[in-house]
Length: 568
Image (cartoon, rainbow, N blue to C red; front, side, top):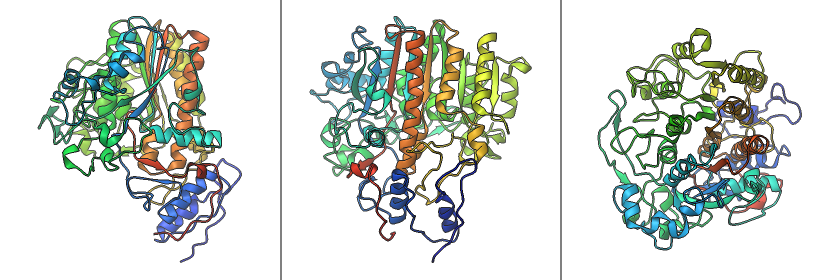
């Protein structure tokens, strides 16, 4: 069946007509329409891959003939880029945890991390660290640094980074190692940068909990964590000898290990303790753990969290909150804002000094993950809580919420300036409610015209969506405006849309999300150069886990695509 669609432009944009309308109409009538080339190389590649069901460029998962074979995480090793660490001394220098200091060379260290020595995990030749070591590094930095930045590109493994770098470079410039092309790859921090990689495996998967009682039903879960280098490979760029192992589908079932989710993984980095998938800063039995942000606050530091996805989603939640399950969003937000919560009903946590992220517009009458105390309305921030924390009502936060007809960047920065001047806290709440509250995707070529993903649909944004939302870089700048009023501060910044794009098997959105995150990293490095130095500052750029993108022909990321074959 042939569908003829009007030549429609995205509101507020000019140039090439969007094929998104064609895809939407095709989906409505139950057919697939072969996409016409637009001249946007990555957009065309993604559109044709979805139409044909496969791509010579590569695929997610195990089947090269199925572009959408896998939509979840993996147990791949994850790159770690550090700045302000080389020569900074024991505990801060990354080599304190790599090579001969790798915890994976020691049975005692493995037992300390996992509560046991996981099968096939001890490796006398290991050069990699564990993600819990990033907590150790930050904790050591509290003694000598003044500014700590933890940047977590959610879902960005080495292959995702390479794809973005290829798009930036216009060529395949590397096939191993640190790579080049993105700011965080090329920036040297006055010669203090280092590069390594880490294991992200959880304590376990399959733990069941009760959100209402904040208890764990089956400590230890159903599937143990661990990392088998013989099955996975010993570098982030290695092709796994057992191709199914990284996604818990090993040929040898005895070598089965769980791969992590975002909340557990981020919590490992902020508490130094391995836990179960879906945990937010609680251990394997459900007991609350002390985060690096809380430790910093106890020593007089400011602390904040910024994300391109909802404010209490997995990674920003792990900056501070306590909960047995990541989906209890409203209570997690309460912890972040210093309000009574299901975890802290009588003695609320102090709250973060800055909380900026998405979630605006995602409204529900019911939400199973929120437990019995879920309040109908916004999934992440209730109207009552927003009113309570606002300085206009005697709260501690200058609030900046997406508002019709108001420029989001200008409004957020104005609120940040006010909070800084009046020594108040800052809460920024933005996003596109239609898409669960995340910021608009800036795609590979820099526009806001996403390609279709797994469902065959593509996100479309109105002029208001673009005008009324700040970018992640602008959110980061606003956060620094407030935090720089503190002599010392800690900041978590998350380009969370990388994960959302990879779950959607969307290389166009994924590359764009990496690039927008990279721009936010540059805001941080520019701030350090203008207001501090790398003796006083520490920056960690990493990811909480990988997906399972496999790139077969990287040159197709910068070569105009040919017409797609017939779809599956």
